[in-house]
Length: 218
Image 1: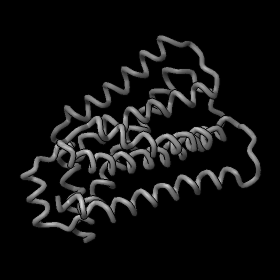
Image 2: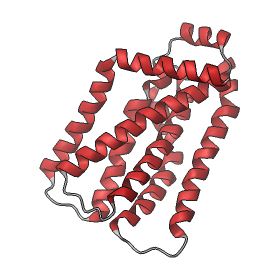
Image 3: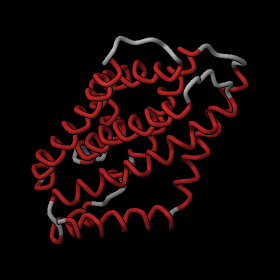
Image 4: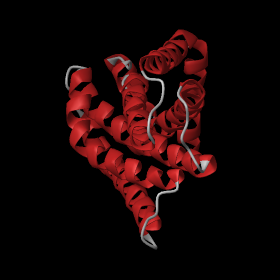
């Protein structure tokens, strides 16, 4: 299974490198969104800066992850069905989207900090939170993309299904990232928030592994 996951992940990464117009399109979307935001506002307080950043991450993930399953044709999915297990296939997709979203999140953080004055007090902590948040959001929307792909490849369905799950996750990430602005929290609160987010990630992965075989057979 490990070998199958590795080869599927390698295949997706190579396809991404060959179809660079998709990657460049997402990067252009990130740069243009942040640039327009910088022209609209000159200075933001910490709470607004933090909130806008995570909203941008949400839309970046929807654009980056939506194509994960929606671009796969029925014939290609039938071919995968004949050569790999559903568990290996969904794990490879989760890992691929996680890597892609981490790259996009770090790029967007760099551009956001350059174009919009950053009120961060602890940049290292915020980067770690961005890595955790990018991974969490990508896992949720990968699972939603798998479900939407079975509903006539309806991308809108992915956003509709993902909203109830992603909303509490975004609120947790916004709350956790406030620690990078030197806000004072109760002792142990930061670890509690991080544990909740990691627990949600583990739950999403478990749900994907358990539920995807039923979608796979359809």
